[in-house]
Image (cartoon, rainbow, N blue to C red):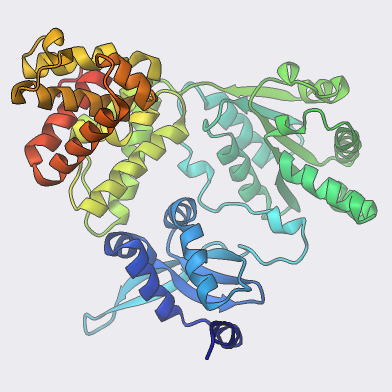
Length: 470
């Protein structure tokens, strides 16, 4: 049987999920499979996509962001016509029977997850995990939280409600919380400005603007996220303005989020900005230390309690994250997710030095602070040699290893090219740079002391002016 016949036969049969799981284990590694992919269950196959389930939203987001393309590639070996994967969150609870044996009960926690044929409804997804009761408040977001709570209790009290703040500050969480409360007794539409624009253009092309107008103007609650993405789209802004007015006239509630105040929106019609300013405008500021600390404590407790192995993140690491990650709440949560995932994959909680490396891209470090001169200085001090000795042509063993180490650290901690690095090390050839990097990488595989030294040097270079000791 030739390959084309083989694939044709496969396409006429149902997917063999057990074979796909075996392929995922072989191609993506046992650690990744046991930690993440094993938790995927097959639900149903459709003409061009398949529906899978996972127990939590966190696991789904991790798989989608890191492994989805590889999983789809494996599935397409069995079924070429499968072009996408959808996930359902189905929580599995352990229930003990009378004999003490454990059984699993499944409960679906996002009942309307995907396959609604109406293209407007398909993106009207309210996350049941983003609620008022798990929104952590502090001075920076208290006003926005209280205003959102008031709107969910008494619609049209503040109309429109306009919430603005930087990326990852909790705006979408608040909009979602309002939607969850109000959908019990109202017709709620929750959509991003980008998706609103997509549906608008699609309706024009399909000559179906009547349906578009009817759908958006007949809702009781309209929540629009990231309104700044409407900038410059004149025709869409025109339609939005009339939709906005129609909803206000019929007493519907409008809640809008953006990354800046109404008067700071660029390329948005003045009359729309004026409408936004006419309601209640509240901002979410950067979280202060106390709020960051509360978030870290809550998220680490939630995650460690979720897993059976009860991961215990040290207070030292919690304090470090609370102090160092100041940009957004999302980055704080992302840092905790990384640490917990590292702990589960490697079966140990990272120490402070390892934590700094795991989350280094989230910390307030500009690449320009890490210079080749700084790397050379730190390495020379560590190995107790002078910079002149390191940069000399001498090939004594006690000089070669520090030199190779400095070159390796320059390669991984800066964006300099090989020729640029060579020039900074006494005009050495780029092949010498490559050899040095490969030598250190091989030594790290065999020598734990080398790994420890590299980690110490990384931390001294990255946190040279910090108060945290290695």
